[in-house]
Image (cartoon, rainbow, N blue to C red; front, side, top):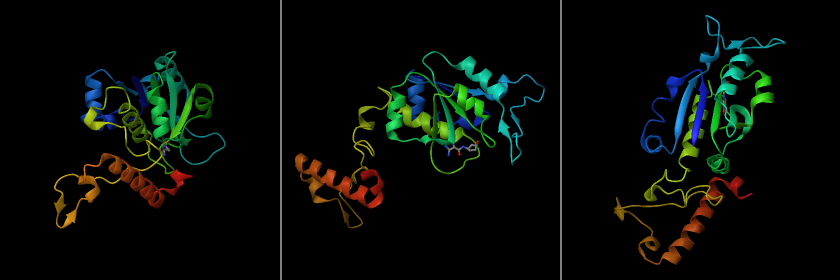
Length: 222
Ligand code: 4FV
């Protein structure tokens, strides 16, 4: 998969997407990630990307010209242009799975008070929010989407890192788990898990997942 990211802060992407599983996916060619500086599509000495909102109001907006030129030069036929903003549909595991099956992605990150509306109307295939809170810019949301989507790409997660039984995979939170030692400071692993009775263990785990979901995320059961 090819993911292009359009941002005013390319340096913010150095680090989170250069380690561990994402690093390996990039080295293995399973993910081709390119970070682009929006100012590279400006033509004035000050590399202007923002301006005041018509009708007044606080703050600045991202101008249409640099975004139109950047998106039109980066977008290919199979590219899905995704705007990151608090006004988007709420990003979740289902959408991550959907995007992992999509073609290439172009993630357009916001800043200031947001985008000139013509960018949304003319160029955007999808708009995503990572949550109902306001961030200083869209770089972190873009990293969240890159991470959640990349780990679902075939071949990215090794067997010992599988995404098979994880949270939200069956609409439930993950069941509780333990590893060695079987007893730690008097705290013991539930006997069922050392019983070797895998059918019983599966059944118990499903019950635990449902109990935890009822307790911590009843909204997921609706
Ligand atoms: C955001 C979110 C977000 C809003 C103002 C960037 C900021 C600035 N993006 N999910 N929550 N964006 O807070 O995606 O433009």
